Amino acid sequence: MLLPKGGLNWKAARAQLPPARMLWNLVTRTRFLLLVALTGIVLLLWRGISSSASEMQSFYCWGPSTPPIDMSQNEYARWNAHMQTPVVFNHHAPLKVDSESIKHVDLNPVKSTRKAVVNEEKILIVTPLKDAAPYLSKYFELLAELTYPHHLIDLAFLVSDSKDDTLAVLSSELDRIQKRPDHIPFRSAMVVEKDFDFHLSQSVEERHSFEAQGPRRKAMGKARNYLLSAALKPEHSWVYWRDVDIVDSPPKILEDFIAHDKDILVPNIWFHRYKDGIDIEGRFDYNSWVESDKGRKLADSLDKSVVLAEGYKQYDTGRTYMARMGDWRNNKDEELELDGIGGVNILVKADVHRSGINFPCYAFENQAETEGFAKMAKRAGYQVVGLPNYIVWHIDTEEKGGNL
View 1 (tube, one colour):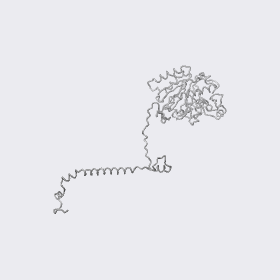
View 2 (cartoon, rainbow, N blue to C red):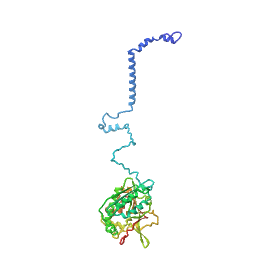
View 3 (cartoon, helix red, strand yellow):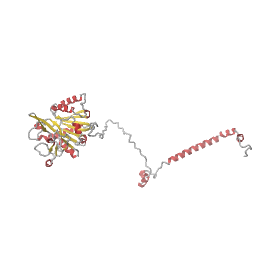
View 4 (cartoon, rainbow, N blue to C red):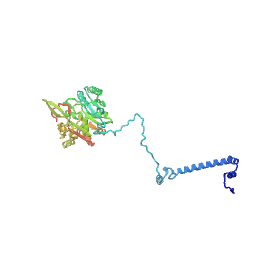
């Protein structure tokens, strides 16, 4: 086609274009519209197939076209040699249990440490009672003086085989203490009743006679175990065994004992006896002792069912008695490792009891109750320690004649 002499201009180009009516007829024809629609559909399908193919390159089906159960070991190994299936663990998604009959107890946070007050460690004070009405007033007077925070202390008592008004007096004293508006009331109090049909006169002659010691110690061991099983709760860090017939003890006794951080700790037990105006400081508890070779030989010669009663001339054990040692004027924190202990005052880390160390109501290595408890604890690797110069004062039993 020849260009005009004057060059290419708009008028000349327009003159070469077909008429607008002809173009409109061409665009509106059915064939043309169908061709455009078909071309668009083909382009869209091609784009979608290309995109899917590129995405599918991230996924492969490795291994033979057989289920894993039908694969040989080699095929299974090759199948697992490729990329592993990703697994996401969400450790923050809790399992919710709605059943009211299921209770969760976590003992891991419950510790027994020197910082018991700071850590608000809870103490269980346990006292077995039998015909104890005359001593309860003084008992609660001393208990009220304890400086360890009372809101961290639980009380528990076992009343057994009593013929006097022990239960009524105990209930009255507890009600009076717990209704006080000051800092004296304790966190809680529990009273357990259980009779063992063990009847022994409370007279000094019969109760402290040599013949009564074996059966008496077995019955006392059973009473302590019943009380412990009923009163010990998961939140308790310490268990403080305290007899009812104590006449004097330091108000800071719990803090003093806890500061030693021992598994089992006992003080020295003495009594006051006044004669001609003179205070005779008597030694009371001969159940806290250090074993001797003579004692070991004696135990080896006895039947395993025999319970050795300490402090009686019938059995000469040659043991070293803590009651004969120490002086309240000396360093109260001096320690002595013991093999047997008495039950007037015992501080125990609660986990010792939870581990199964209790008070045998049978002959355990020829000992029962608290002495058997010490033997059992030592066998399990726990510390049993006494404080010769830390004195807790017991009532004077006015025991006479023959014995230590």
